[in-house]
Amino acid sequence: MRRAIAPALLLTSAISCSSSCGAPSADVAPPVAKTATPVHLVGRFYSADKSGRTFTYPGTQIRTRFNGTGLTVKLSDPSGQNQFSIVVDGRAPVVLKTNPTQQEYTVASGLTPGEHELIFTRRTETWIGATKFSGFLLDNAAELVDTKEPFSRVIEVVGDSISCGYGVHGTSSACHFSPETEDATATYGALTAGSVDAALVDVCWSGRGMLRNNDGSTTETMPLLYDRNWDAPRYVADVVVVNLGTNDYFAGGDPGPAFESTYVAFVKKVRATHPHAQIICGIGSMLTGADAASARAHVQSVVKTVNQGGDTKVAFVDWAEQSPADGAGCDNHPNEKTQKKMADVLTAKVKELMAW
Image (tube, rainbow, N blue to C red; front, side, top):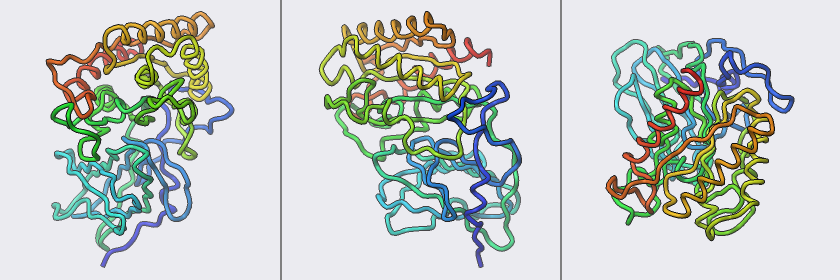
């Protein structure tokens, strides 16, 4: 016989900023105290109630430790198209694909009796559909184990399909989007966070831009979507990486001065949300030639403008254009090799700026 872990338990779980974050701004709730809890929610969750918590962003994690031989997770996923990475005790990840009519998924079974760690990470992005996490089911002899917060550092990435991992597992540019080839755990953001032992919060959406989206629309750009699907728990990031502008160019070339003014306003919005964060701005890796040079110049100008305005904790990261020799993922998105190269550049920049 199995017993359910009450969803109310989830309301005590959160990630918090490191001790260097200081006091948050007035519109951000104070970080949750680092007390031991059995479940840790890493990333953006919303609609917290007695039935559980909802999440949409790729890279969002649920972490727990349990004493037993197996574990079942309770999920509601109406789209039935989301995919998740399951890692038990540091082993190779196993991919879980949801079913719109299924509510329970076995995520660990047949283990040696004793304590085990589970890391459950969403691979697919927001537009595919929301997922609600409603707790775990355990055998009567099993129990969840209280653990301290898994991270003392938080890196937030704000981006588009590149940051979501669109097509990262594709074998050529000829393939198109599929949940099977998208994987937030294989992105430059996830790899960088892993290199510096930080939580990743991946706030990304395919096709979205800073001023305009890849279809030319100016509604629901990333600055307008930035606070969507996030109520509680709140977190304050140590580092915020902004990788936006590719879709602005795909919509029709150089977006002009309005791109810079919109970008500056967005950096100020990020600063208000994360008052002590190091902000890192860059663009890459899908633009080429004159577009790449133009976009790089715009972002460097934004950084200079913000620095001259008194915010010196904003820096530029220089990602190179992806190399044809490295191949490409679906629809010419960066593949695993290119994402790793981007991660190496970003990791070096983060270590330089943060002394991590």
